[in-house]
Length: 379
Ligand SMILES: Cc1cc2nc3c(=O)[nH]c(=O)nc-3n(C[C@H](O)[C@H](O)[C@H](O)COP(=O)(O)OP(=O)(O)OC[C@H]3O[C@@H](n4cnc5c(N)ncnc54)[C@H](O)[C@@H]3O)c2cc1C
Image (cartoon, rainbow, N blue to C red; front, side):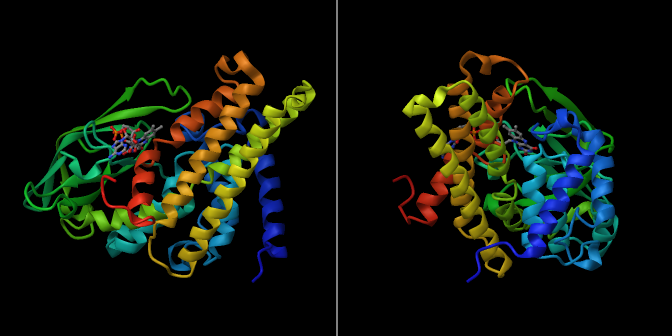
């Protein structure tokens, strides 16, 4: 078995890195994907990536990709995330929204959405979480009632990233009141300018990332916007998101931050403290473990394996890596970490987001306990 990157892959990484250096301003590097500054500039950046064939290289040719290996896409994701994710919200488009449409969209939905995603000029948001349905997503209350050739949607989504600039929402709503909740959810690809959709910013302590409340008040959505069969949205989403657990290589950015903080610690002569040395090496090992576990998931998925518990293990490792780097960084710079907008302040907040956005850390542990360790529920 060959573990090393091929020559082509090494060359691709170098070329992409040079492209990022050329097109992403120094002061924007190492930011985290948020509303600012990338929602607008991501369009420009993603169009340039698309022109190079680097936005959706892993997609099939017929949908605008180049049938590249999932490793080329892994390199792309690592390099972009390490640079602060200049694709902005469009990382979601290429990671899982597009692939979900490829897997379950109608020919019309594919024609309408995939070309625009592949050419990098459309912003989406993800309308899943509700106030009492975050970890327990199937408890959602947003309801889409069939009315002729439309659905009428009512309800409220919360913590929605990127909503103020998004053109479409990948929305989950219940389409029946009774029955097994997992068989009551449908997917709707909703234009955000549909009358009755309201977007409000929700203030949080996160600071580096803006989230919103999305209200749907008698929103009439054509039935042609429903993706997949009625009440059959859950397996589509579960499958799409199983890749996404490791689709954001946070370890790549965490490693960059770690390297910079190690330099600071060395400059300040802090490594005489054995405790800091240990923290730095633990953080470095955590980043490597996250990288390897993520690769394992990519490898088995690229061989056609279904979604397995390895993806949850990979994500837990990613969150741990972010947290270890953040804790080390705070120890090194001390109260300077309280400076808003500083490298360490950003890393600490990023680590907080890592454990919640995209499904909480504790829920991943529960899933590992049940699916990997085969512990009984509630043990
Ligand atoms: C920065 C950010 C961006 C986000 N963007 C989006 C977005 O674009 N779209 C979207 O739909 N959502 C988004 N979310 C929401 C995110 O998916 C939820 O925060 C997450 O799923 C957790 O749900 P919750 O916030 O309701 O917390 P809860 O489910 O209320 O959980 C609160 C705490 O209790 C713990 N907990 C809950 N149940 C259990 C259990 N059974 N066992 C052990 N522990 C438990 C959780 O781990 C967590 O620590 C975002 C969140 C953040 C922080």
